[in-house]
Image 1 (cartoon, one colour):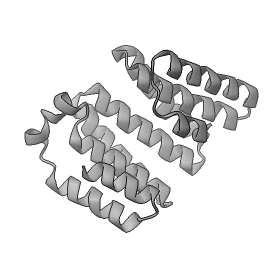
Image 2 (tube, helix red, strand yellow):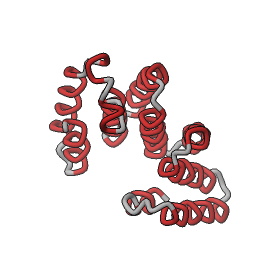
Image 3 (cartoon, helix red, strand yellow):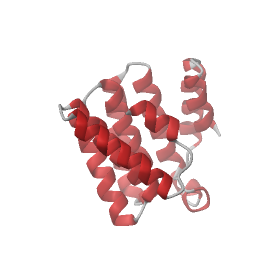
Length: 173
C-alpha cells in the first residue's frame, strides 16, 4: 500500500509524503518474510519499493540518485530471480532515463526489458519495452521510425487486452 501511496502522492505533487511512504515500505521490507508476496501479488515488495523510489527521485530531478537506487534495485531483483519484479524495475529505470532525456540509456533499459519479456512471455511489459525503445529511436533522430514503433506498441497493447496504461504510453511517446 505504501508503494502506491508514494507514487500517487508524487503525482499529486506531495513529494514529502511520497518519500515518507517509500521509506516506511523499505524499512518494513523483510526479503525472507515477504518473498511469498511475489507469487501472491505478482511483484516482490522490495523490488516494487526500489522502483517507486526510482520514479520519485527522477520526477523530483534527482537523476544521479535515481540511477544509484535503480542499480541497487537491479542487483536485488536479479538476485531474487522473479521476472515480473525485474520487468517492473527495468521499466522504472527506463522511465527515469526518459525523464532525464537520455535516449541511449532508455534504449538500453528498453532492450534489456524486451529480452526479458521475450524469454518469459511477459506481453504487457513487452509493450513498455517497445514504447521505451520507440521513444529512444525518435529522440536519436529517427522520428518517423520511432513514431511508427510507438503506434505498433499501442496496437499490440490493444491486441493483448492491456487496456490500462494507454494514457501513460501516449504521454511517453
